[in-house]
Amino acid sequence: MTADQILAIIRDELARLAPEVDFDTADRNRLIQQEFDIDSMDFLNFITALHARLGVNVPEADYARVATISGAQAYLLAMVRT
Image (cartoon, rainbow, N blue to C red; front, side, top):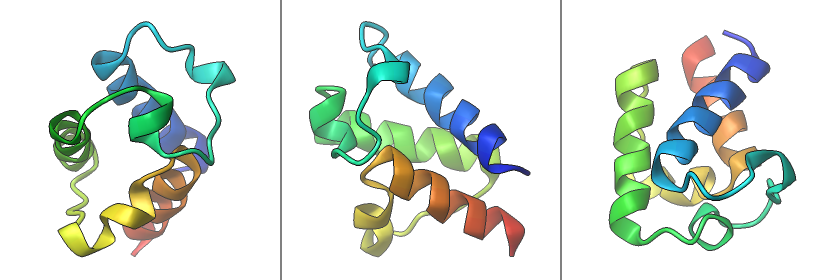
């Protein structure tokens, strides 16, 4: 799986949670919860959706690593390659 494919999945899942936000203009280094104005339950739903789509389990200890779009993309890419 490529970085672009991972990014497309992240985009799809965030669009389900915050359809009003333009993903293309979103700051990829800002916290997802702030950039997309979602609460902690929505963030957990995002993590669950990523697991369902990619089969990657993100333990709670790693939530900070996937808290931004850039971080999530890098983390998930590394996990699907291992």
